[in-house]
Image (cartoon, rainbow, N blue to C red; front, side, top):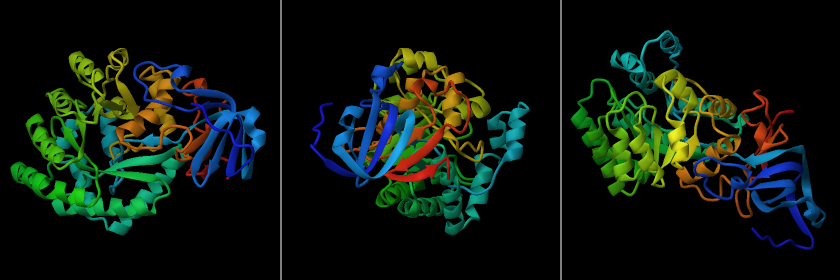
Length: 416
């Protein structure tokens, strides 16, 4: 991209001595290399009023002055991470269920006994807005430390329609107060305990979807699987959501294949998540669409206990995103852990790892001016303690981040 370079320009912040800037100029499909993620070598970034105003090589640095200069010390800079699949708003924990999963029990067995999601619904229903807000602040603080500057957060732990509305209202309030950007999603998780399925779905479609839209929610998601919603129920919910102008997302084929991903393809969901049991022909069809596949290594390993067919996805140039999928089932709030597992368990190259939590994730959430480092975009950035993007997933330690920057402001510093 050709940029106009002023003779002299005063900015708020300069980030200098950057060994590599991964600019991520476009969505990445299939396997990626340095040229696909727009590496600028030996460069600097200029920031003003929370926006990136210049990205370039060191030779142009003398034309800029700044109130603040951050020395990257010959390290890598990438866009801030976008975690596009989380269940952050809940109360309680399920550590003994995690132990049972580790001992060989299946998740749908736990769910069928009233554990899992249903247990968390009951516990969350006893929490006040204030308690939920405190928990959200605590959890996002840990996400920030791992490089996250934008997070999607799903509802879904409401014990009834009214409580789901309370969760969405709480997310709206948190969105205004949070240091990071928040994207709320209305989730049909499982039918609440004791609920009549038909009545619940009727209320969800006729009352909850319009209420969510009035609260400014843009996305609707459904958990389609054994023990959750059937493909027919899922299609009914998503069809109404689409008619209401909402963007469709789908949990599909996580625990089994019962035709859920077929519904996602048919209705043109923006994302289809998990896909641990998805047939090759469905993956091939997804590769022909602009559908984002969201994978979670921790969920695949510990909940689904099955690796998705990543090779077929890459071969068919699927748009892939990775996410923590934080929930009380497995409390992962560390995106570095996600990338490390994405490298070793999914065998993803480092360029794909970066794209999956930046530009591809921004596309999945319909976010403009995020997920890329270019003029006019938000200055949401990570300064790494690594010299090159090729070290991501290769140098395996947790303290890989020096700075996390949101709209030009430092949210996290490893030295503080």
